[in-house]
Length: 294
Ligand SMILES: [Fe+2]
Image 1 (cartoon, rainbow, N blue to C red):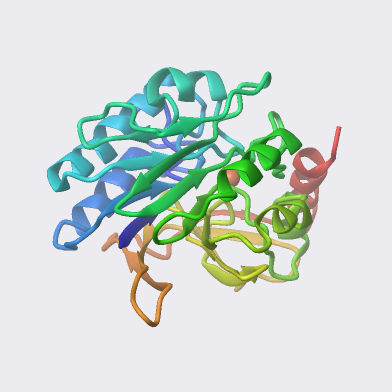
Image 2 (image 1 turned 90 degrees about the vertical axis):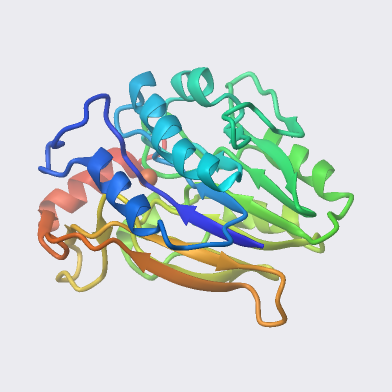
């Protein structure tokens, strides 16, 4: 099983430069164009912040651009929601988020909650993929609701032939930096409880726009860098710098040394150029605005 893991495409309703001067649509197109020669992909996963503006047009662009890549390879695409996504528009255009190579909804089962959360299951070649919805409207941090965790426990009661992969936006692991602690998944212990003793072998996330590997219980956790921009910890402490350079991950499962992760970088002539820099007060303001529980 080879997964192409994309995240944080941050598409807008228009195909042009965003407020930071990055054309998100072009960034996605460039990433996928540079993946043209990558073969044997079995599924494409997009772990949230599909849209930057939550518009139906942005989901339509994702559906068209990622869908074209997937249909040429005859593989499904699984989307999950992120903090920038809007559940109504997401659902209108992407349904459960699980699409077959022709763009039809292919989820084996979905959750229905009063808040319209998007969580769904698809078994692909014996691997069970479960997308969860960690979006908290108006906030930057993530939370997986008790309803979803109860549903997840029920789904996991029966193991899948080759194990389970969870996909959601907000990482349940963080490096020891405040912005990640404040804006990551706020209830990782609840998720750890829900997957303990289950066949979950891998968790795929995005959100931080950088790659991290760690564990939650006995499951590997991979955070893939962003398609729209890349962040790392080379900026001075308590500040943040995003640079150009669309990236993605090829994930290999099912071999004796799996899971394995290979980060792929688009050949962007502007790679490494600064997209934005937040100084200490600016980053503090972001954390206060988006990290405060209401
Ligand atoms: Fe995000």
